[in-house]
Amino acid sequence: MSDQILWGYWLTTLVLFVVLFFMWRRFKMKLWARVLTGLVFGGITGFIFGGGVAGCLDQAACAPASSKFLGDMFVRLIRMLVVPLIFTTLAAGVIAMGDPKRLGSLGGRALGMYVGTSLIAVAIGLTFGTLLRPGAGMELSNVTSGAVDNVKSQLDLAAGAGGLTERLVAIIPENPIAALANADVLSIIFWAIIFGVGILMSGETGKPVARVIESAAEAVLKVTEIVMELAPYGVYALIAWVISTQGLGILTNLGMLALTCLLAFVVHSLFVYGSIIKIIARLPVKRYYEGIVDAQAVAFSTASSNATLPITIANVSENLGVKKVVAGSVLPLGATINMDGTAIYLGIITLFASQALGLSMGFGDYLLVAITVTLASVGTAGIPSASLLLAATVFSVIGITAEQSVIIIALIFPFDRILDMMRTTVNVSGDAAVAVAVANWEGSLDRDVFIAKSVQ
Image (cartoon, rainbow, N blue to C red; front, side):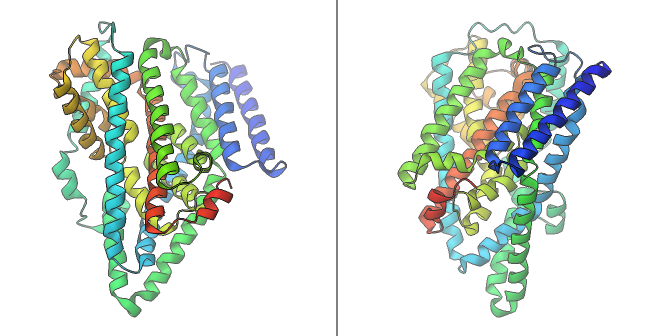
């Protein structure tokens, strides 16, 4: 990488950062518009300075890679908020309920909707995979031995996380402080609920602690607002790096798979989530999408539901009128177990694998895949390679051998970052839609805020 290209990239980046700043200070452009603008700016500069269609052959030498640390800093800032936000908002939400019995109603409705939308998601994925046949005629001989070895190591790492039973037991923390320190989301949710119930049962004696928790929750949300103002710059740096290192040429290799996933994601987001908002909550769908666009953009750039959680909670509370008692409980749970995008993806790549390998699938196979994908997506382990383990598990139920699974996953793996960005956006959108529906049922939705102030 020449110094001229590096200096040109940084000069362009600084100019664009100034433009984003003036959009805010001078023209009072809304945050969601600035985030989308940062997304576009980052994609264009990543394409131009990253070698165009092919991307950088030497990823470390890409000019946009020099600014990736800005995106990493932004991700660390929002990850910094995840643990205190989950604990304080969820505990404060339980306290605000006033009656622990409401937890059963709220949690049951949320879980029911998460499972229901996951079933619909995998059905949509299987439908599009069947109609478009993304794996037909795919050549598997081009997969290198190095790629296969890399996937094997990833699968070994994922297998070390244990099965569903072990993960269910692990939800109960032996040490709540350790769970907080290790950012063990499900354990934090469990402890926050138990702690909130304990405060309620303490009556007058617990009120001083309740006030501290409620004040802390409010303070963390204010810090979230500060971090959100940095989103346009963080999104810019992350997208510039992704586009420069991945390039657009990779689309030609797995273009049909990408198109199949994209169409399924769009259909699920528009029709399933749109129906939840329009039919169940009886609210304008356009306002829903406007209200969560910040969270969607951050989810797309970070490819992490947990990392996006603080912004999702802020969007849903401030833009969609969901009271914190619901937002603070439903959204952390959704970020951990609601994987509609993953369900769609697993359904499609299972058909992709069967088509590439020339295997036929009957109705029983489809039904088995649907059940396996739904259960597996809900029980996803919170580790980077979890999706690889899920794919191998689902492949096995239709007779694909372990060796064949590794080859298929190795073929998809280089392109998985782009697909992960798309499916994470779907996951976050689903979390928000379910939160609105549950809040509507629980009488915890400010409809005036949703209609009049969904874009802040």
